[in-house]
Length: 261
Image (cartoon, rainbow, N blue to C red; front, side):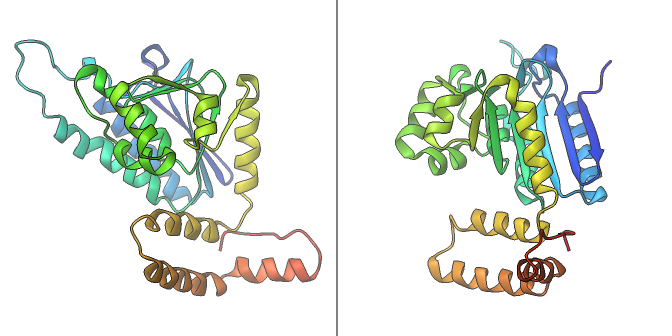
């Protein structure tokens, strides 16, 4: 049986591929375990950027419904336990990683799969990709951060439409609405991801991590709290080797050699 999670670490770039293409990379408990272990390896390797994508024709169709018995007559399924054990820790971890997370959506991203994609920092989708908040189709509500991400990314009216109707959103529309960073042609997706990962891998990683952290808490902070946070984070970055290198390179009119320190 093929490994459900593929991990490749090359230099400062880590790549995780969801690898159940026959099931549109839908999640099982075992797959969650493999993904958590892969993220452990990424952090231990101290890479400077993470790419997450899917194998085959889809990114992720969310939960594999056959992995939990919800048939008529069966005992009730504790979906809260599934979310608390697997999905919430995954979303929190992706958001907290001290490196940029690029998500390459190569096909359908549905249900929890769509919201796991939105947990990335830079989401790039192929033109043929689709985003579907499919929860309402089976009597559920968006989870894995969906009710948090959607209104912040596309506004309350569009978030309500996506969640209540469960309609498919094209990659082009997702880019136009601001749900994702960019849409590219299908045959350009791999090259676009490679170029972006290579760029981020040589940038000042501590600064990018601080940007990521500050943007996330800005939703809940008032202005005064955010100003104080910017001050504190900037104080730390001002003492970094990368800041000294950036200033020196600017003065010397050369390309900086950032080391992520």
